[in-house]
Image 1 (tube, rainbow, N blue to C red):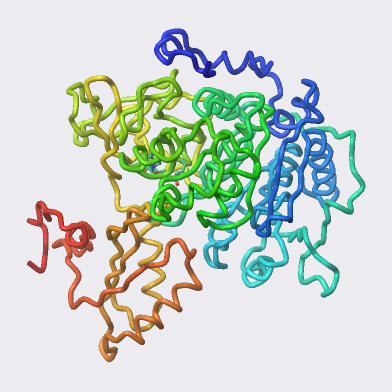
Image 2: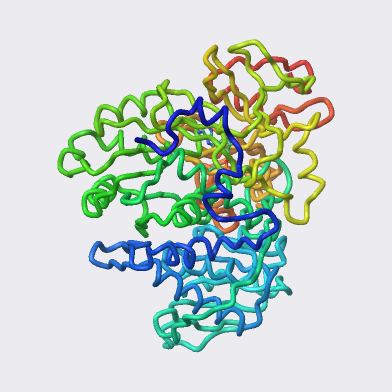
Length: 568
Ligand code: WT7
């Protein structure tokens, strides 16, 4: 029997107080995610249950932690952070690969009431800089491998006081502001006073890219736990004997909401593999740890499809009982394929960094329509809005903007230092996601696309503006426009168009040089796959570059209304 039972019944009798009661939370109480994921699970009699099975790049580099280990280690790390001088409300960045310290560090930050700011470790120094500057980050927890990127930008970050290096081997002298901390060597702390955070206390700050401007810091609060717990329970269907694997990196919201909080607040055993994608590695991981529940992403699923069905047969995946996916459109073929090879469909889930928890999803026991995102989670008021009037559309199969009443527990509370942009997300009292969809006659949602120019490549949002700005800093580039182009695996990849300044000649060498130049500024995920030289960029009469004309060309689509085009 699945946790959700009947979706229809849950819709009828829904209240978020279901989660509050199960978590023993009464409005007005203190609520601390760090406590809920560790101490509370121990108090419930699961102290000796495995919480984390961690595996490094090499298969034999494996570690296991019980919930009691997690409790003590988060106390230990928290004690250290306090001693250093970090207190409630301070922003503490986590910037490292998927090491155990990342997971333990995250919960320790929450336990002392500070704000966890996880950033993807592949970010280059400039990407790191803008996010640390915006957040006024006080400390960064990192590893030797990544600390040099922090050193490069330190001069420009007056608020950054401490660089905590978790794997310092003592061989080289510590640099400016660096402090070594070893979780293995620190004296374990059993008794710890957790900061009494309340529902609206800040918890996590995730950065996400928009069409214009700098990346936005999505601010979450401890009360988000209520949605994360219940969605993990009903959609991921996590049950006591599950071995759960969320493939997302905690640098992104899936990796924290469901790669840390959802599962551990339910007392579930999670697996983490600290390595990139490779079909064989992934299948071996599932076989070895007898993974039962697997939450992944369309690009990974398409890559597995590409690796072929033969490799699957070499491994035992009979432990799997439930699969789900998030981050980008999950094409129908991928669902049909997974049903064929694993005997299970991937259930698509739709949500955003801003929503903090799942919004539109497929449910265990519900009839799946491959290619559909499913239906809104109980308790949510969702509508498709007319793009001109922002009024709800009532006809079936008519495209509209996906919008929600802004009232579920895990919703963002604002964009950090950017209330103005936050307010722009609302129209007629609705929160506008920026995505378009249709709803069929049975209430299933079918994703159409984004309503802005943001590129979703392999599940990662890339702001064309950020890439264009990086290009413009190169001496040869006069103007630039960045759009997506189709790709088999990543769905879309980044493509840049540039016009050159007088005196520069288009060549392959120059393309390489520009690529190398922007590589230093951008995250590897945002890198263009191609730069095309163009004589003139399509512009409106007011001089605004019309990305959609270039986009349509790349996708072989009708260009649409170009009456405002200047150079036609
Ligand atoms: C955007 C949010 C939430 C976890 C990871 C992404 C796109 C997300 C789906 C889906 C089609 C999807 C949307 C959304 N997206 N899930 N199931 N089908 N598109 O978080 O980086 O904030 O991106 O990803 O465009 O707005 P994010």
